[in-house]
Length: 359
Image: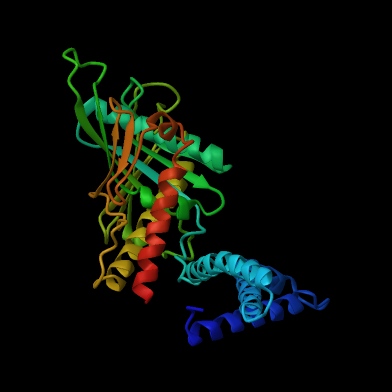
C-alpha cells in the first residue's frame, strides 16, 4: 500500500466521522438546522468513505490471495496469481481516487457563475465569434440541466455580440466552467472576405463565481450610480425612460452597466449581482496568487489575457493550448456536445498538479 501512515490514519478518522454523522442524523431529537448541516457533511463524506471501503476490501482480498500462493495446489496458485494481477492494478487506482477526493476543495466550485464574453481583436468577425461562443455555453448549460439567464447583451445587429453577460445556475457550475476564462481565438474565412483568406479573431471569456451579499460587503459610499436612457440596435432593449444603470465601484474602479430591463430597480439589482461577482473573483485571485507565489499553475490562472484555445474552422479542429489537446470535432464542440471532452481533461490536469504539489 502506497498510502502513508498519516494518510491511513486520516482515512480511519473520516470513516469514523461518517459513522458519527449517520448516528446523529438518526437521532429523533435532531434540530432542523442540524439536519441541513449534517446532511451536507454526510453527502460529502459518503463518496470517499465508499472508496475507502472498496480499497480495504481489495487489500484484504489481496492478502488472502498472497497466502494462497504458498499452497501446494498449482491450479489454485495460478488462479491466485491472475486475481492478484487485477488487484495490483485496481488498488493504486483506488488510492489515486481517494487522494484526489481529499484535495482541498475550491470553496467556489459549488457556486453558480456569471459568464462574461467580450469581442476582442477582429472587428465584426470577433463579435460574431463572441456570439457563437455565448450560444455554445448556452447549449452546454441546457445539456447539463442548468438555468441560463441572459443579463446583458450588446449586439452588433448581424448576430454578433460586442459584450454578453449571463447568470448560470445549477449544480457545480463554477467547477465545470472555471477553466474557460481567457482568450479564445478563431481562425476561419469570414463571410465578408472575398479572397478566401483565413482571418484570426478573438473573444475574451470570464467565468466568475456568483457571490452573495454575505461574501462581499459593499458600502453605499463606495458606489457611484448613474442612470441613463437605454440604447441598442432596436427592439425591447430601447425605451424612453432613464432606466439603464451604470454602477462604479470607486475603490477598485470596476464599472458595471445594465440596461436589459425596463425597470431601473431591476437593472440596478442585476448590476449589483455582477459587481459582487467581480469583486469576489478579484479577492479570490489575490488569495490564489499569494498561495501560488512559488508555483505557476499550467492549467491556467483564469487570467483574461491568457490565450487558452484556438478554434480552426477550415481544419475542423479545436486546440486547448494549456494541455496540448486537439479535437477534430469543432461542430460538436460549438454545439456544446463535446465541450466535456475538453473540460474533463482540464480538471484532471489541475488535480494532477495539485497532487504533485501536495507530495
